[in-house]
Amino acid sequence: MAGGERKERFAGVSDRPVKRFYGPDDIAGFDYHRDLGDPGEYPFTRGVHPTMYRGKLWTMRQFAGFGTAEETNARFRYLLEQGQTGLSTAFDMPTLLGYDSDHPYANGEVGKLGVAIDSLEDFEILFEGIPLDKVSTSMTINPPASVMLAMYLVVAEKQGVSWDQVSGTIQNDILKDYIAQKTYIYPPEPSLRLITDTIAFCARHVPRWNTISISGYHIREAGATAAQELAFTLANGMTYVEAAIRAGLDVDEFAPRLSFFFDVHNDFFEEIAKFRAARRIWARVMRERFGAKNPRSWMLRTHAQTAGVSLTAQQPENNIVRVTLQALAAVLGGTQSLHTNSYDEALALPSEDAVRIALRTQQIIAEESGVANVVDPLAGSYYVEYLTGKLEEEAYAYFDQIEAQGGVIAAIEKGWFQQQIADSAYRFQRRVQSGDYKVVGVNAYVDPDEKLNVKILKVNPDVQRRQIERVRRVRETRNQQASAAALAELRRASQASENLMPYIIECVRNYCTVGEICGLWRELWGEYREESVY
Image 1 (spheres, rainbow, N blue to C red):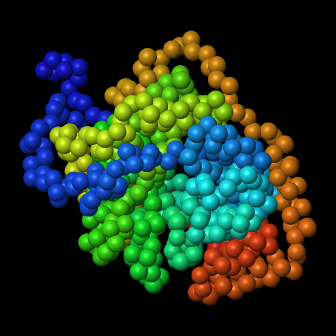
Image 2 (cartoon, rainbow, N blue to C red):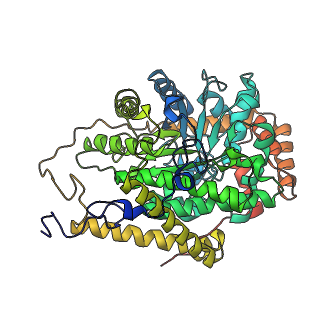
Image 3 (cartoon, rainbow, N blue to C red):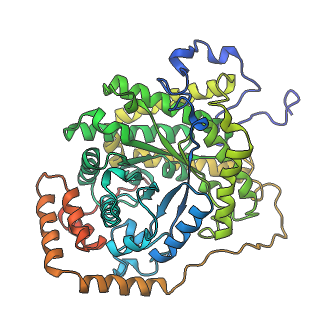
């Protein structure tokens, strides 16, 4: 023991040394109006709205999707009945990669990771009985994001809901796919075109839609530190802004509908500081670098999800406590929307009972803890303000390194991001294996006689057969002339410079499939192949 302390060195998840206590010297030069401001005022460190949760609670948006559209529709309805206030859609791997359920590559994966979507018919079933003018929907998908958005808009039309009444988010963040998630299809240039086309289309026709959710979640889940998640995510955001401006859009035309998505890990105060630093950096970048005039363009609005990578298969009930602390950090950090993971997710897709506990966790924080009664209650804490400033400083250091690589896309192509994350993941794993970082139930307080007694969700193996039958029936019974003409027009437009969204919508209306649309682009643009960093 050193100086009466339990160990010589204290550090959290990111392995940043933590002092015994913090005081005024740790935030020397701190200026309230420059560095904080009141809630709802530039630079939005204290939150993007003046009243925050006193005016409206964060959206409780549980991620859901498995099997067929019918099964996921039932889970959606269940969650809404339990008090969830927004939908969040998980898609299966074939859908994420732009393959129909009867493609050979889809075999064994249909409906396993999320819901299987092949055509508009699946979307019609998925949202049956769910009024799209009343519910906000998030869709976690990237290369086929424009196709899913088109399906959502056509379903809204069929419900009699005008596009200006539709609200929600598509993830649509391909850069983080190249960096971490790896569900990319096309090379960067055409991928960015699809994104800027959706941004431009929605700015003019779907004004309440968030056209991109710039995601740090998958970067963190891959092994990045909090500072890397913060820096890499915001650097990607700047790259999208630059691409949209190059495409001819005024920054204030689209920036208010950009949104973000962050992970919430176990280091309670670091996570709170990360959200605060993200808002401050983004506000300054948008105003000073990109010249945005609209204050809404300066606001970083974010969804948050508790850290899936922190969940353990050992003693899975412990995950309820981890998720609670992470959710509390997200709320104290000022998130606009939150998903809480289910305790059984290290074992399988969440069961109905587990997802209800996860939702109730948010509701208890909102209704019983008192933390929603005051805006940014930790403001002025020497430690929190120090951490906020430290994370900002570390993020700017990473921005300089990214610029030295030639920018985000050049750094992706060189494998720089991937190497940074791999190194961080390796260092963390070494800490766990050595016992320097304790994980309860894994390398500390282990129960050698543990017997798992968790009822897990199993996807019916018949899902694949039923989904294949449906997509083949759709192809056989649709108007063949109209679907062929729509695909031909999309091919022509894809070889030109027109906005592709109207052509994608026409394909969807005529029941062209996800695989047909994405397959057309595969032919024209090719597939991206990553260079190994090792």
